[in-house]
Image (cartoon, rainbow, N blue to C red):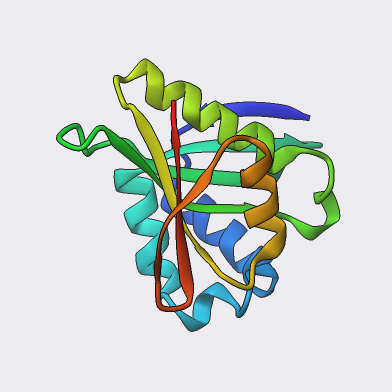
Length: 145
């Protein structure tokens, strides 16, 4: 496994999101966002933390590090290819994101998660995240870094 903080292209992000589209909980990502537009937004505005296995993307976290007013970094997406789940990739990517956010002067990392995504909720609880608020079918989880 190799971890990188890297600026992926829109096409690299889109290819990976299409590959893992059906692995999102509770429904495919493509049912809630326009994948090409979302990939463009992530490529242009987020910092990507990527795990490669055999030169293929095995997992990715994309985080917005731009709200210096609130000092909150926001993880837009974390997704791990199902073939590589259970290897600690999500936890490592999240910790890389936290380290970069702290390095840039942020005080918190926040993300939105569907209430039915128990694996993600449980993993984040084990590394210090708490539920900050509830909105509809989502929890917003946060961690002071």
